[in-house]
Length: 383
Length: 184
Image 1 (cartoon, rainbow over the protein chains, first blue to last red):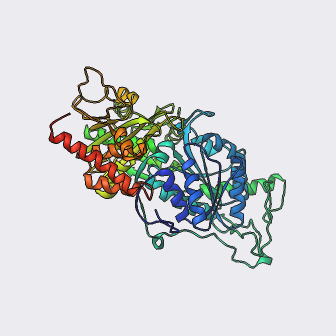
Image 2 (cartoon, chains in turn purple, cyan):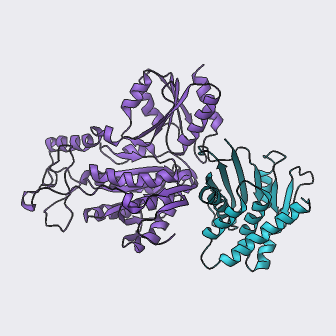
Image 3 (spheres, one colour):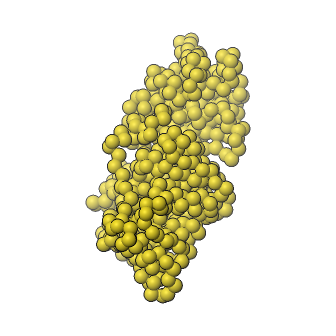
């Protein structure tokens, strides 16, 4: 591959490499990270590509520092990303919360392996889905995307940056070892066809700027450091100037807005891929590599004459509550295959509220589901 | 839907994953097919068991793993013992004959090649995987040889094209000779 800023054409590359290229297409010019299987190839690719395109690659001392470095880079006005896996994701949790509190656009990729702890470094897991939702302390909302192919690793990297700028929040890409390491054709469009969202800059002169006064969609415009605007950022509960204000009233106002700017915009944020739902009696609901295998199982079930459908969560967080509620009124069951002991299945069960049954097909990690385990669950659900 | 599945197995450092990537790329980039490559390997940098699974299909591949392989390529005893027994008996088995000792009652149609020895003769043991890719292109018609050759050239480091072309052709010609002689 040549050293042009954004590649274009058809490539047979891994999801990790595609993710790095997607970030570069989105304008990411700062990567700080600490290599960890199975996300190392993202760092490796960035270490080659960022210097070629005038960006910065830093191998940090650990994942705590990596997360902080991308927050700093973002405040300097640069699109910034880090990538990690389980143990590193745990270390990033505290400062992910800082990114949420400071409303800092950035992208954090977790190529999930099987845990807990060191677990199975080279083998697949999806055990961090609830950690993605709740891993940092306090209450907040987050955006998390789940690619199911190298092509989608490319596209969702761009989408993640757009969402992070639009909603001024860290965005998580919750990939898995299989999608990160598998190779498939990835089509990268010519640079002029790639549209990305710029940062929302203040519309007022510096003397009138208050860094935490939101627009109508609850998101405040963001001045970069060094542009002449005064700003102050702190992880403490703060007022519209960004100054600490430690009262229940200030907390109420701030946290409601942080949560609502995502939850109330969920129709704009949530992406789903639906197949054969029109007449479906049973719906396989999954994400990442498990959704690909789920789709294969649905294809087989359809071949047997079973009315099965597929709902793939491209966005896991915010959770597509409304769509699950609607579907739960007309289907008999949701089948939820995931490489954990039941995380997203809990959300499906919550939203279907007993109207449809939720059948978890768990996998402890270290591999993926055998398709027949999902097909059997589909058959069983209709008995 | 025509779906073909290939398993390549060996140990880390032999270039098994690269060989799988070359086959997948040949199909997806140089022959207009759909293909996926998934890889399994252990925590070791070299020496551990390693496997590439390639699926080639004329429609998009949702399940990127091998269920019923169309061909097996093995470059280590461990890979042979692990994967050959699970495959249907009529599936061609391509082996590096210096690295794999066959069981007495082996039922698969076996295609042996001294790939690593050939690579050493060409000057670099590292191209044994490319000899094997050439051999596979001769024995199996899943991906046309021309596409495989283009894929080799677009996948190897700059400056090694000549050596790798020689390696590919050595394997390819050896395969064609074996087929012509009706040998297994």
